[in-house]
Length: 309
Image (cartoon, rainbow, N blue to C red; front, side):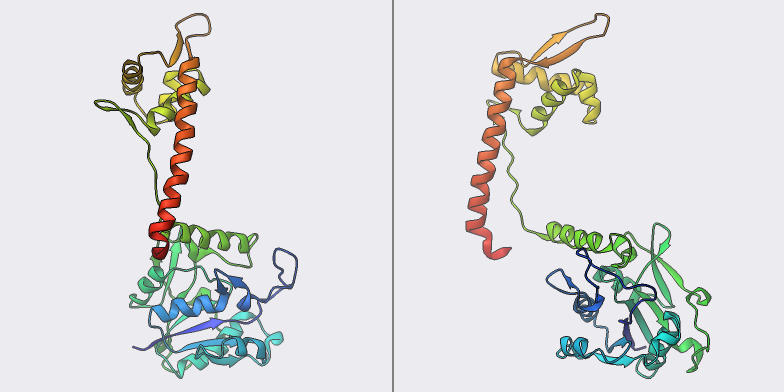
């Protein structure tokens, strides 16, 4: 069965939407992740080998056609968008899609954050389907156009369609540029995605003698003890056993030959622990060294791995 796509680039019903600076928002050409919303959607569809791709517009939209002139997109115009709702507009697009494909991936233009992995999982479904996350239906959706035997129902409604649920861990299927703070949420989504895929350098500084005895873990533990005034509270905060915390502290003090903690036991308000002056100075020097090492490491990383980023 041939599977194509239909991007709903018509204006959503209701009042005009605006961007972060309160300018009217033309969603298809809104800048996003180094490209535009609609080009990002087209790119993901192309990666999944979905073809042909139709774009449903309301009116001539010459600017949009020029914007996509090299993307080999087929345009379908909804000539009377003001006379009906968006589902009626969608019916116009589906009637055009029926002539060119057996199944269609439907993408509302304001929902550009879906991943290639989710799209491929959707394409593997044998029936009409919608991705779900946290029990909510998202986009894009797969629709089998052969279910009507070549005839499109007069009254088209999503609620009446039997859609298989495709559970996914991908919350991006629920994101829309038109929801409250939608632009910020989608921009943050792509920023996090870039961070996850970036080649980075991690610097871990460990102090050692015969054995390793001081590193990020014990340093954080000592700082937590100083902040909470309690070894037990610090251990709990770090999801560490009380006995393991004591072993780490005892090892550091044994290797360095001086106490890192002032300990007071019992009393009306219970015991408390704080850093000694020597312990505090040691930690400050360790933190300063880590900062310098991270900067040096980043400089070397940029020199040797710039071409791989």
